[in-house]
Amino acid sequence: MLRTVLTATVAVLTVAPLAAAQPIYPAPDPDPFYAAPADVDRAAPGDVLAVRPMPEALGFPGATVTLIKFRSTNSADKPIAATTTVLTPPNPAPGRPLLSYQHIINGLGARCAVSHALYETDPNLMVREAFALNAALLRGWSVALPDHLGPTSAYGAAKLGGMITLDGIRAARRVTELGLATSPVAMLGYSGGGMATAWAAAMAPTYAPELPIVGAAEGGVPMNLLKMMEGLGYSRHPAFGLIIAAAIGLEREYPTQLPVSQNLNAFGMSVRDRISDSCTNDILYVGAGQGITDVAASTSLAHDQRARGVLEENSLELYDKVPAVPIFQWRAFQDPLIPVDSIDNTMRRYCDAGVRVQSELEPSTDHLAAAVLGAPFALAWVDARFRGEPAPSNC
Image 1: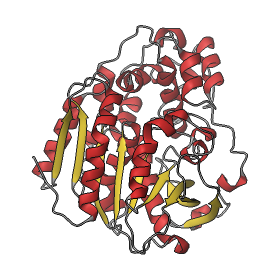
Image 2: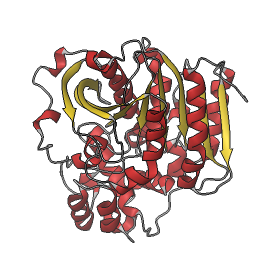
Image 3: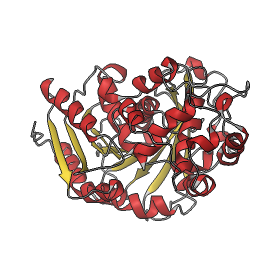
């Protein structure tokens, strides 16, 4: 499904213009805490803008919850205000490890962000990812949960997620009462969360070289959006809602290069408007059974260089930098949703550059099943990095 989502997005993005429609952004978060201050441009990336103690989150008994607003950077290199939620275990030890955990977030509205989902009994969050988070808390680690789609819920923007992840780690370490100033850091995420994790690991040497990151565990990562485009089909799909959601999210981050709204037909605009503030279930419901030709005016600009440039900018296989820390990478043995050769090529390039890479294949052909199968091994790998053990490699 993820491969179809990201590849089909391009066809929606590159159709002949019909009108001068503008991008549609999510409604402003009703909570003023999330708003960017007028002087956000005066802050440096990772500077703390505000801190709020939060109630205990359902599913994480005994953990103290702290919401942090901080300065980050968007894909146009402009300052933004972003948020991360830090879970602190009971009886925290000084200098305890900090795990930045990047969730899979399939949404276009503010309420889809992890900081909100923690208090809305989100079944995906509770069932799919609470196990890993509680396992980390039981080890005595603090866990940072960045809202890595950013303030406009730019679903599909991978590089943005990397910068927000790194700045969220910076911010968590700067909140004195959390006691994380000297903590070692690791990162973990799968699928969309793996994209943010993998980009953060690759960008850290230049974007945040001061962070004491000991390793990154990244699973099921779509590493080349151009190759995903090549697998595009025009048939109707039960998960088409996520396809157009990714188109809307990318348009929010790249409004000039990807004028999606100008290239939708009347029905496509109707679908766009209905899901512009929605989360996974509503997005899937509205788009179920639709296809590219149902929402797009035409596909005559499928080779538009502006669109290709955006995909290239968010394709980690094409990014020339490499991580400075060990990498644990896992994926399904066969994965119909993402081009696995791009993962293998990227890991091979990392190995050639001297990065310690441990790659694991899960005995599954299902994208989400592989997430569950690999999570215990990813956590064990992170645990060993926090203990200072030499990182294994099967390059």
